[in-house]
Length: 301
Length: 169
Image 1 (cartoon, each protein chain N blue to C red):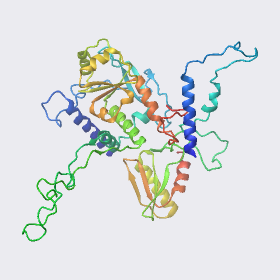
Image 2: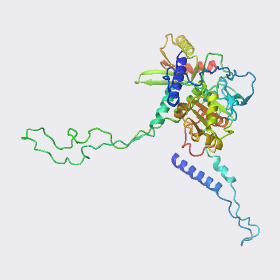
Image 3: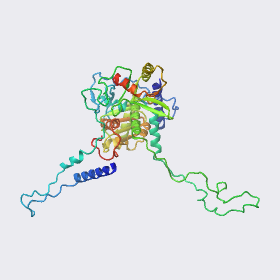
Image 4: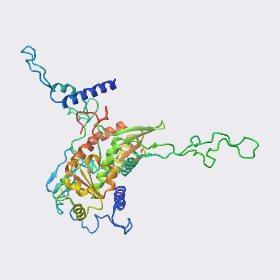
């Protein structure tokens, strides 16, 4: 029961983020269905494991005996209809972890705030120009007693407890919490049918309209985040997505929770899936660092 | 002392990288004013295996197969087949049962079972019945469905570890 409400919660979060990037205004967000659910009979589901269809990609890392691999369809960007080229196995410890929304929230807020430096600064009574002399004598004038004309009580005086100088909001969450955040985000995308696996990012044309039409035809949603491992991507996809605001390409090292939540659909290449599985699963079986992991160890992923 | 060793290792690794990346050195010919049997300078990177074997691994290794379980330290591996129960308790990264003691306020003793997946309420019922059978009274328990852990009042870590090992987790 709690799990069902969590899944519904995930869906709500997905829909709310969709509304920030959607083109059509119109209906309020609580009456609008997610674009990949409207007018779309969901007949093509990946079949249950072991049904005999060719599994084109197995998990490189061993799966524990009490868990089974999750499966997804392999698609391609080369043609409109290249939607079900085969099955791809996904490691359950990366793509089927329990939906820890609290960790997702923690990581998203950390990403927003750790870079923040607020430059707000106001002058105190010591910094405001003037105010060194006692304005009138202590006794006899009939007025209230004051020591300087720039005290916080005075108009034009300094601020008593204002913001003081550039303040840093830097903090680091533990490495494993950040890793768990990525795993939870990937699992949420897979569970909500917002994850698509593609064999490679080769496109027939460098036309932006082609990729927009492809996303529309496949009911991917309003915004798409495409992730590959390498940084030197084919020219066609770079050119096509250059001027588009809602469809973005990213190398796998740049994958983060905020981008995954901001974009509705996530498209991963097979290389990106292997890379992510290798890197994220290493944290489940590693020692705590003897010296920083930036330095060489004998078996870093 | 560990810091000095770490810096020494770091310098050794820097030398390793620099030597590997430089272009090959000029070989001095044997004819350059030396005896004919003198081999000249030979560049060899084979000796770096003595440095490389000192670099530590980053992953916890799989425990080796023993003839007899439990091992002298009392460790038993999980059963090869997952037990046919509605819940699972996974091992920690050091291959141990995830049962830990906790104490707050100096006198509030608790036992935590972590890393549970599946039907956590069934496990809670079984833990309660097992501990009632052991001690005679039913200990208060708390189930946290978000973190998938069970907290029991009192120190029962040895008993619960033995019980879970017997189940095959």
